Amino acid sequence: MNAPRQDRTSDVITPDGTSESPARSSRVARRRDRRKSEIVRTAIGILSTNGYQGMNLEDVAEQTDIAKATLYHYFRSKDELVAAALDVLTEEVMARLAERAAEVDDSTPTALLGALVDEQVRILTEAAPEVATVFSWPRPWPQDIQDSMKKMRRRHDAVFREVVERGVTNGEFTCPDIDVAMQCLHGILNQSAVWIRPDTEDKAAARAAVVACVLRLFV
Image 1 (cartoon, rainbow, N blue to C red):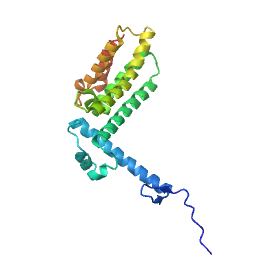
Image 2: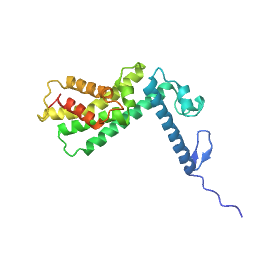
Image 3: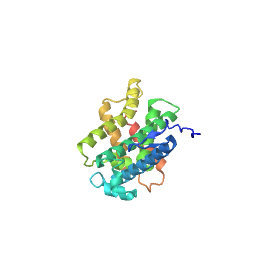
Image 4: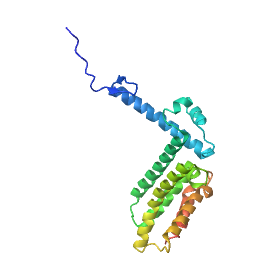
């Protein structure tokens, strides 16, 4: 009697032409995603410390304990890895701001702007200080990456700008020139990483002082 034919219609065809079960394929994909995330995190750390010019793939490979040749299976170039690192930082900041905004019971522009400023300062000084060193301080970047960073900054600016515009529209804010005020707002936020140091004893009070400073631009 012939053995029952094994149904392999659900197998996944890999790039080398072999097949593997969906379960194994899923495990491989998860391992790849974890390693890719580790590589990106390492790149973020190097970028925040050394900047773009001081980052090289050899250091990334060494710190993630893989061969440089293996690194190219995940990212084809340094710029591709840098772009991924910037995307991750941007998405994390945007997610934190959205979560904080959702927590504000009083949805007046003043309350919402204060909460967003507090959260942004907390990101820059406590939760993810690498955001400040990568995005806030002038550093040389290739033109393509500069263009991408401008788009990321515009997304970030839009979160605060929408609240300010709503406050001006309903008369809660007084602001002769929103563009100028937004430049001042971002300048205060970026400088908060200088004012609030890791050894600052009362970080909540320091953040509150920054919030008060920003609100004086509008209220």
